[in-house]
Length: 403
Image (tube, rainbow, N blue to C red; front, side, top):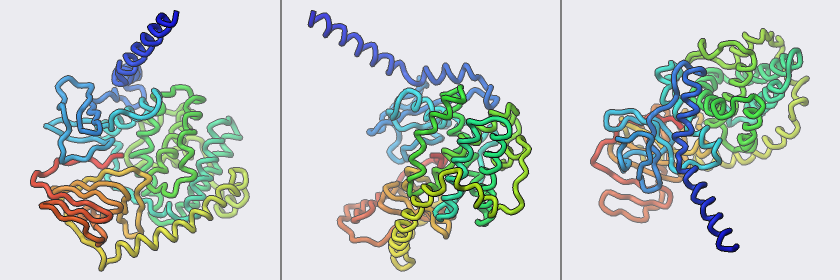
């Protein structure tokens, strides 16, 4: 009996492995073929390079390269390689089956974004979302949108009015906030919306899936990642209107304005007064405690960064062909428009540098490195206590900075 049980368990394990290996590609293709342009007018399925830790490649295309070039950054992105565009994915994809679908379709949407006219030209900074009041108003907006998604009729419209009031006041307080936020909501927000909409056709399941983004409420850095929640929330609200909004949206659209127009919402004239009256409904007290703690950490962090990247303490390296690899929550937007990245990599025509931290200037033409103790210099490699620079002779091909 024990042998039979062991044999049965072995067969179950084999079948399970084969089902997993069956490949997430086949599952995603089936889902994309079923959608077949219903969402965006095109089949979202695209050629993919899944790149593992040693740069071996798993692909859904038979003639794909076997290995990924050493001089290119490995990231969830869109890339041109050997004369062909590819979706690139860190392999294996983490998470459960549904999460893998979300990740793949998210990146496939990036592949299609230029042809859909949904690729913003600007690289949004959103440094204002490091400020306490901006972060507070954003979280209040999220909570109001979540409530609106579960309601109907006048109650839904009231919650949407509150959400859009929080949004409007934030943009009233910060110059350029609207353009910055909208660009990232179109770039990353719509990609995340699409991944989740494909994975969860049911509104109820879709809304429940957003709970895995609750970590953003506690995150120290939401300047690059906020749109991963804002985009899906606005996308769901727009879907619930039954209006064909996706046919009219473009790279310059404001998802909030779309909701305001479709639901015929008139915002209060005195936004500050309206926010003071409604904020308690959306867990303001809890948000305020979190933001007070964050503000103290922010001041300490920024003081260290400013000292580290003081003009007389940096090595400035020019690059005409710069691409970067980083986790969205490891990046700090600075008021000068630059980005300080912790644990990221910058790939240039002369080689690459990885560090903790490094800075990308606002014009994307320079990498700044803090002057640190040099540990070793071997040929074309410089290793310090915080960053490593490796010079290479080969030039790298262009990589779109999608995350």
